[in-house]
Amino acid sequence: MEELRVRRIREGTVIDHIPPGKALKVLSILGISGSEGTVVAVLMNVESRKLGKKDIVKLEGRFLTRDEVDEIALVAPTATINIIRDYEVAEKFSLTLPKVLEGIVRCPNPRCVSNVPGEPVVSRLELVDPERGLYRCHYCGRLVEVSEMEELLLQ
Amino acid sequence: MSGRDLVDLEDLDEGEIREILRMASGHDPPRATRTLDGKILGLAFFEPSTRTKASFTSAMLRLGGSVVDMGEPSTTSLAKGEGFSDTLRILSGYCDALVIRHKLDGAARYASELLDIPVVNAGDGSRAHPTQALLDLYTIGKIKGRLEGLSVGVLGDLKYGRAANSFILAISRFSPKVLYLISPPLLRPRREVLEALRRRTDFRIVENPRDVIGELDILYVTRIQRERFPDPEEYERVKNSYVVDLELLKEAREDLRILHPLPRVGEIRNEVDGTPFAAYFEQARNGVPVRMAVLEWVLGHGGA
Image (cartoon, rainbow over all chains, first blue to last red):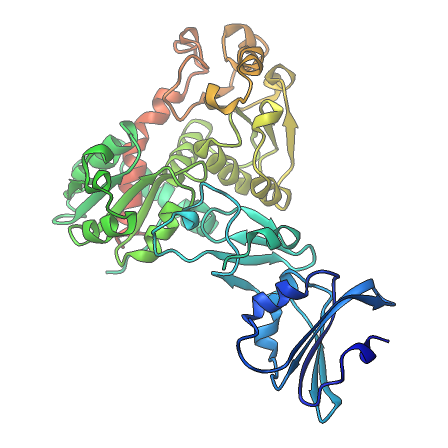
């Protein structure tokens, strides 16, 4: 159904199965603001058999690589990535949590040295338990769950 | 000659911990040597300290080295607004290794990444105090003849107390018979500490020291600070349950030994000092031999 709302793209990337309402967060993580000049289609709260509702993002003319998409898992762990060439899905992959998050998420511990303003310190969280989506702050040792991270995103 | 950091005991394997303890016994009682002749140790205490700073100074002088002290935080360039990292970088140009204490969690880790010289953590926030934990282990080895298989209770502020945190993690690596974590519910260890313990040892969370005192080989006492309680009445209500006095010790085994990182403010009554239970002054004396070993270890004189 939703395919009819926005036309199919010829070349580029479709990010499907984004939890409803998270499409803009996904774009923000990818650093896409719209000023790039290429076609970006954002569908929010469309029907989904798998999720009930979902968001979809279509990027015309841009091919995301595995390396750049993993951070999407922080806000949209269910998302799937479809690389489109000549209107066909040329490649499809799901997301895995990045092993290290450097400068992406701030440590929730206000007394952590990585939160000191004016210091050239870059936050660093390391994945310690992929099954539970658990990260640990490299500096203070605080455990951080993926579900907490949306509020901790830097930028 | 290589150098290495001592930021957290969790970075060391058991063999390295034992190596430092072995080196410490070679310096006990401390005597003058020349192993660090001509070396300079920088002291960067961003938080007040008397014992730790004095024992590092004493240790360095015993080894034939000397110290450069950044001074009190209120009188340094930090007070003029200079960044933490700038202060450290500049100070590191004046010495061969740096001891750092700071109120922020992870400060020593950050310093160790910033600087080319070895960094020794003398306490970062509520996180870690590895040289204290080493001297705790050393003291236990000395008075009990072993580190393994002991029934250990840790009492007090287990959430924010860095000495308690480092000690809990350190002793958990030496297969305690059982490890009791004794505190008011508000001051139980942080999640990351409990998760690490779960992988290592049998531990139990206890609220009242009376319930376990009769089983213990070692009771490690730390201070409960009033400021930790959002409700002052709550503090008044619990504080007396965590005081170690002769009344509590009636139930204790004869060979129980009590440790405390000091300073204490009433949580161990003075009446306990003259009993065979009291090992905390002996523990404080071990600070110098253990820190001599640490300084040799970080500056590359290890495993002689």
